[in-house]
Image (cartoon, rainbow, N blue to C red; front, top):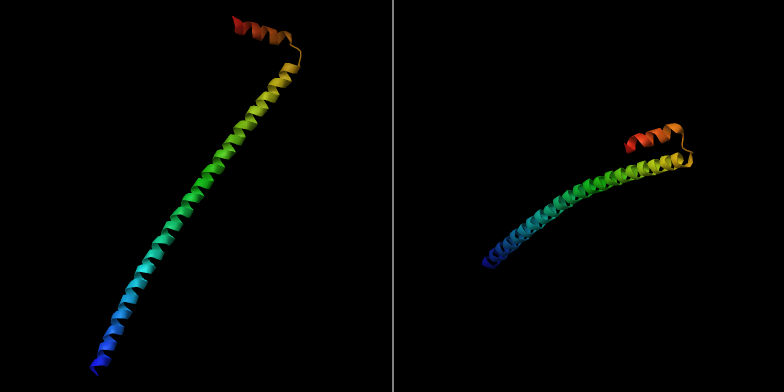
Length: 92
């Protein structure tokens, strides 16, 4: 009977150790999941930031292109008396 009691106690200790290990593993998994969620949030914020920056760059490029085309159109036209007078006033 003493042997049976000893075996039961050993099994209980083993079970407790397994439960402790499982709790540690569960806590580790929980920390990993929290880190993954934070990383996902950070990645989403970075993605939004990159998209916003790309949109701004595209808008600036489009504006420059429009200004260039507008300037080219003006350069293609012959100068008028008004253009010459305006240019002359700028030099004074």
